[in-house]
Image (cartoon, rainbow, N blue to C red; front, side):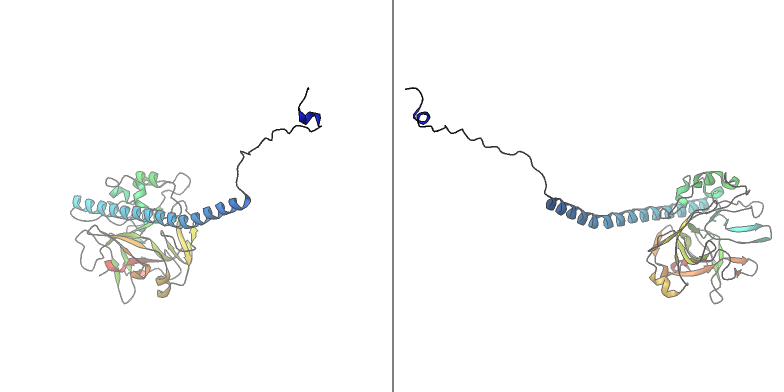
Length: 309
């Protein structure tokens, strides 16, 4: 008998079932959202920490630069009868001159024979890199800082017709500088050498903190960044700095959340807050010590109190 019983009874044979297992895998929408949420949370925790680390690194660089400047002027003094270089923060010639902002690195004119108009004419043998003379926390770098530093007294900005050109940095250089502190406090006198004279400050160089600068009236300015600060743009003669509006009150100084640094004659660099500074005004008449009238001139500069006598 041909065929099987199933075939005779009209029963179709069962086909073997095949189990198909899908090898494809992937994330569901919910899983992707969870992963993205975790990444966002991690970034939210890491970015502030990274920002703080960058700020601390820049602060360390700034402290080192202030130390290098202090070492340079002390080495200059060791080579020059224990005296620091003359201040170049002046404008005018011969007996018709007045003081200028202490962050001046190159003056407009040579004040008198035998005096240089640039800091680099004195310190270039000790500081070759112009970046040392600028705070790393400044918002914009001065484009021609190295060219100006290398040119010294011969500096002439290639993009301007003014000859000669000046240059202002972001550090305040206080050696052999004289400023006005008020009727009840008298004159500020920067150190003339490592030993410094009677009633001279110990501060050689410091971060810039000022108020009512001619480039941003009725506002604070600094090379250190304020909270919600604006940028005062770089110019052909000046580096940029941070700015925030204010009224120059003691309470406002206490609220400024920035840390300042200053190099002293003994070589150490010390930190302070804006509340630990005292106001100093630029003198317009050296023979009398009178400062610029309010609202004119370079404005107020704040000097660390610890270095004052």
